[in-house]
Image (tube, rainbow, N blue to C red):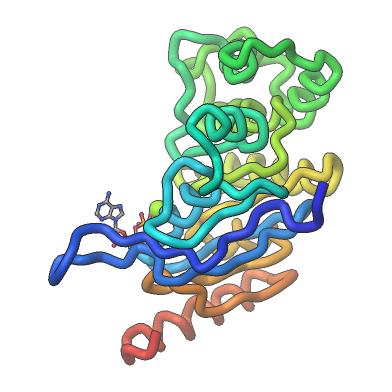
Amino acid sequence: MPAVAARAIDLQKRYGAGDSEVRALDGVSLDIAAREFTAIMGPSGSGKSTLMHCLAALDTPTSGDVRIGDVTLSGLRDKALTTLRREEVGFVFQAFNLVPTLTARENILLPLSLAGRKPDREWFDTVVDTVGLRDRLTHRPSQMSGGQQQRVACARALVSKPSIVFADEPTGNLDSTSGAEVLGFLRRSVDEFDQTIVMVTHDPVAASYCDRVVFLADGRIVDEIRSPDREQILEHMTALQAAAVRGQV
Ligand SMILES: Nc1ncnc2c1ncn2[C@@H]1O[C@H](COP(=O)(O)OP(=O)(O)OP(=O)(O)O)[C@@H](O)[C@H]1O
Ligand SMILES: [Mg+2]
C-alpha cells in the first residue's frame, strides 16, 4: 500500500451561484497517511462532511481531484468508481444505517453479499471478536444498544478490508461509554490491522484517540496538530473560534 492512502488536491466544492453561492470547500489539499487515524474537526458548516464525501468518492468536487491509493477519481468511469467504492472504501455514518430486519451478522456481511464476494472467514472472526460482538451476531439492531449498533456498523465497514475507512461523527449519537468502545475499536484497527481511518468529530476526547487532527474553517484547512491530547485540541478549537469571531479565518 502506498504511504499516502488518500489525497485531496486543491478541492473546491461550490453550491449555488452568484450571491447565494456557498463555497463548501475552498481549495483543500490534504494527504491522508496510510495506517494513521486522522480526525477532521471544525465548526458546523465548515465543510467536514463535504470533504469526507469527496475523499470517499461519494460526492464529486466542483474542481480539484481526489486520489485513493494510486487511483485518480476524476479519470474513472461510473463502473470503475462503483467498484473502487465497494472494494477500497468503508464508511461509518453518524446514524448507524443498519438494516433493521437483518441480524448483526447479516448486516456486517451485507456489503460483501451485495458485491457477490465470499467473506474471509478468519478475518470476519477477527473483526467480530475485536468489536466484541460474538454473542450478539443473531440480534437485530432494535435488540442492541447504540454502541453495539455502531460497532456493527464499524465491523461492516472493515469486513471487506478497505484501504481506507471514513467515519462521519461515529460517536455523535452515543453516550460516552459506548463512544469509548467504538473509538477503542477504531484505534485498535489502526494499531493492530494497519487500517487507515479518517473521522469527523466535534469531540476533543474522540479526537484525542487520533494520530493527527486537521482543522477546517470556511472550507479551508486552517490548522493541524499531531499526537494531540484533549487539552491541546481544546486550545486549538478555542483559538480558532476566537479567530473566527474576529473574522480572521
Ligand atoms: N446540497 C447542498 N446544497 C447547498 N449547500 C450545501 C449542500 N451541502 C452542504 N452545503 C453547505 O456547504 C457547507 C459545508 O457543509 P458540510 O455538511 O460539509 O459541513 P460540516 O462541517 O459537515 O457541518 P456539520 O458539523 O454541521 O456536520 C455548509 O454551509 C452547507 O450549508
Ligand atoms: Mg457534517
